[in-house]
Structure formats: C-alpha cells, structure tokens
Image 1 (tube, rainbow, N blue to C red):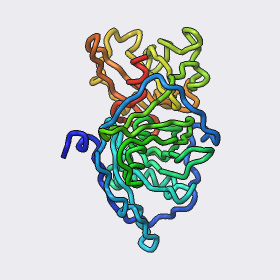
Image 2 (cartoon, rainbow, N blue to C red):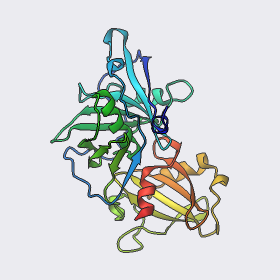
Image 3 (cartoon, helix red, strand yellow):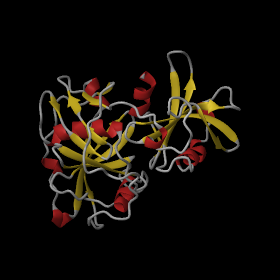
Length: 305
C-alpha cells in the first residue's frame, strides 16, 4: 500500500441495524442549518492523502429487507467518521440518537461522528450533514469535508481531478481532488468578530476576541476565539500558568467546562496549545460534541494567518 493510500484508507462494512430510520428529531442543531449556501473566500488550504484508485461502490447498496446500514470509515488527521451514502434522500438514514449509538467505541462502530452525503440544494452538488458522537449537529467540520470529498470520489468512481460544491451549515465549501489523489479544501477566511463566532466575551482588539480572559477553575485563561463556520476557543495558558504543559491537563475534566461555558452560546471547540519552540507547537483538542480528538484543520489555518 502506498503512503498516500495508507494515510487515508477506508474500510467498508454492512452493519446490522434494527432501530428506526425515521426522519431525525430530538438532536441538537448547534447553529441553524442555513438554506442558502454562501461562498467562503480563500486564504489557505490543506491537503489530505487519499487512495489513487477509488473502490467500487457496490458494497454501498442498501438492502431494506435486512435493515443494514452500509458505510465506510474514514479519518482525517485522526478525526474519524462513519460515512453514509445518503444521495437518495434529503432525510438522514439514521437519527441523532442512533448516530450516538453507532459512534460508541465500545458497543458501536466507533467514531467522532456520522457524515451523510445528501442531495445538493441551491446549486450545490451535494449537501453535507454531520451528527456528532453525542447526537448534536455541528455546522461543518474541516477534516470531515476532506473525507466527504474522498468518499464522493469513491461512490461516484471518479478518476483524476475534480471539485465539488458542497452545501454545509456554514455555507458553500469547494474541495478539490488533485491528480496525486490528495484532497485540498479551501476553508475560507477566519471569522474573529465575537458575535459571529459566537462568543459573549468582549472584544479586545479591532472587534476581535484575542487574548481575552476566561475564568475557569479559578484560573484566568487567555483565550482567542475564531470561527471557520464553527466556534473555536484557542488558549496558550492562563495568567497564573507561565508555561502550559498540555500533557498535564485532565482534558476530560476541563474540556467540558470550556465547551459549556456561558460565554459560548453555541458551545465551543477548544484547543490547548503548548509552545515548544518558534517552529513547533504541541496541542490537545476538546471537540464540541465529540470530546477528545486529534488536531483540527481550523487551528492550522488560524495559526498561519
């Protein structure tokens, strides 16, 4: 297997699925899913390794009599997703509650979320929807978009370069599959204006929330808030901690306190960053709706700007 294929290998399964696949209800939509996609202006992009030869799509045929959910498993920078071909319906094939069960790493398939490839709207080629491992629905996910594009190439049996207009809850995103099999996605321009992130923290610099103070566990954390369609809170430490050692953090304890803090009306993803040198960082991530995950595309984008 080539390095590119190994980095983005997909595994296909047909899982027994006996619960209802009625239209979803009861899941928490973290921000309203917009009906009108808006293009996002480019400032940078990232590439992901992917197989050069897409597999046949026959394994994705769903047999209703067996009530099987056919899926493949993808990961992007450690964010892993259950990919579902939902092109025949504008209704997700599983409910948010069922998605949470599928994402359970002990009793389900195990994943950070379930991604549905759905029919496009308003001129888009496809619509992307995600249910997190807790059943909530985010606006979009940068790593998820890259997996989405690679999955489309597989189910459509596409070769060579391609680009797609994908409608998400954060607007229109256009990933590109390149000649070498890598997927490049344009994430657009970071949003730093507090109310649009959204955060209730007061602006500190040019209407942006940069190095603002956030009180958690008796510490005044220095945080910067940014959105690329979903909210992120980035911290390099607190007033009391001169150096943040991310490996010493009890992430499962402190992560939810950031995520559910009253200053974040739509909850938030949180990146805890340790500076090792002028060219190296170490980071741990608490993802909204999914918990501890690997590095998100959003931070690489933000740090370059």
